Image (cartoon, rainbow, N blue to C red; front, side, top):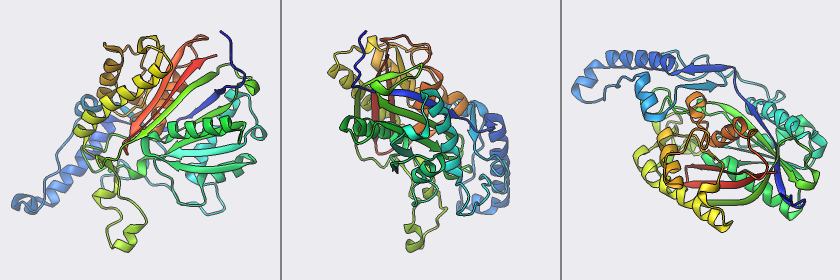
Length: 377
C-alpha cells in the first residue's frame, strides 16, 4: 500500500513494569487477616449494628469478578501489612527526581529507543494519567528536564482515558504544525489511591508506565510504525466512578483519607452504561472511515474488567472475540487505569502486517471514551 508521508504515525512505544508484584492469593491472605482483626476488635459495635462487619474474600472471587490474577506495584512494602494496608513510598527531596517522573523516564527511554529517536528530536512531552503526585510543577516538565528535551511539557488528567486523549492532543499538535514529534507518557501510580481495606475494590489496580512517540511519517525510521487514521473522543458526565481526594479537604475540615477519597464506583451501572456506549463509539468511528468492524485485525481495549471486554468485543463483532483479536493483559497487570490499552498494544502489535488495521480504545470515569484507528505501515 502507499504510505502518506504527511500523515501522523505512532513510531515507538515503551512499557516499564515494576519489579514487585502481588498475587490474588497474597492479597486475599492480607485482606482477610485485616478483616478478621477488624471484626474481632469491633465485635460489640458490629453486634449492636453501629458498624458493619468486614466480609472475607477469596482469590476465586477476584478472578471471577474481574479476570485479575496478579498486579504489579511500585512499592510492595506496607500493602500486605494488616496494620498498614497501603504502600510505603519513601519521601524524596525537591532536588531528587520524583517517583512518578522516575517511572515516566523509564518508559520514555524505551519508547525513544523503539522509535530510533533522541531527546533532541522531541518537541513536546505530555504526561497523561489518572493521578499525579503533585499539582505543580508538572510531572511532564520534570521529565522534559530530566531527558534534556527542548520545547513544552504539560500534564493531563482524564482518568482512565488520559492516554488516548493525550495521544489525540499529540496528533492535533503535529497536524497543526506546532510540533513535529511528541512524547506521550502514562506513569500510572495507582496503588496509593487504592483502598486496600475494601473487599470490592482492593484488588482492582496495579502500577505501570507506558510511553508513545508520535511524529510525521516523513521523519519516521522505526521498524514498526502505525499511521493514525482517525482520533475520536467523547465525554458524558457520571458520578458512577469517582474519587473526592483533593486540596479542598483541608478547607472542608473533612478526612483526607476517608472512604470517598479513594477510588469508588457503582460497578453494575458502569458495566450497563459504558459497554454499549464504547461499542457504538468505535463502530461510528469506523463507519466514518468506511471500515467494517470485521475488517479490524486487532482491538487494543481498555483493561478494566474482563467481562466488560468480552461484552464489548461481542457487540463489535457479533460473536466472541478471540484472544488474538482482543488481547487481555489485566490478568497479570490488573487495571492500570489509562495505561491498560497501551500495555495491550505494546505486547501485541509486532505480528501485524502492513495494511492491517487496529483500534486502540479506552473508557472510564467521566464518563470518557477515547479511541484511535491505526494502520500498520
